[in-house]
Image (cartoon, rainbow, N blue to C red; front, side, top):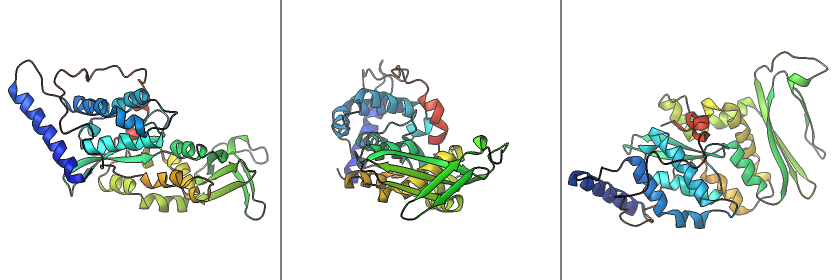
Length: 304
């Protein structure tokens, strides 16, 4: 649905909420969390249709609502961008929060004068997407420190030997030292493999081109994933750099293009209005056994 319809529908919803509040009575005005909860409930069927078979719509809804409710800055974001981020997660089969598969990062767009949600795929999300291709036996990424032993040769027979600093016997080290770089190794089911190493300097060049990082630096937000979980982002960067060389489908490869996007092409698929009066969606609703996931990654998402 067109963006203009999205803005119109969101504005109509806001007007309706204000009308409900002005009417007084015993019905309290809806909170932002209740509004989002109502949208989630209304759009459950559409979200479920977009999800891979291995995911549960009920679990995703609980996790997404817990993530949104416990981060006040997400509640300040536009409904289309919030629901767009949820839909992106559903389509890719990734969960925000606990597993670090993806993040919902709020940020202020001063040009538009609004706050929107940026959808960021995490390192573990990249790994999960690659494994689901069906052609990859295993895929891993590792950080290399200055005091690690690393031997790498490219050629007809790639050779990689990495001995972490804490288990070296040739030259024992008492500390890891600074980060030197990161590498990924993918083993294919046909017996082939792919190895890619990136020095830290190259990784940081990728970081500096990241819109999420640029926005965090611009507004002094040091709780962006690049600041709070840099090593996870280093591993994600080298995995993403090697993505085009992996034997995966076009659809799976295109998933990476959604990384660091602001998905807002989700107009009110639930209809022009969502009546939340008497709604069972409650700010204090139980999160369904997902109590700690946002606490663990909240600092990484709160970059608004």
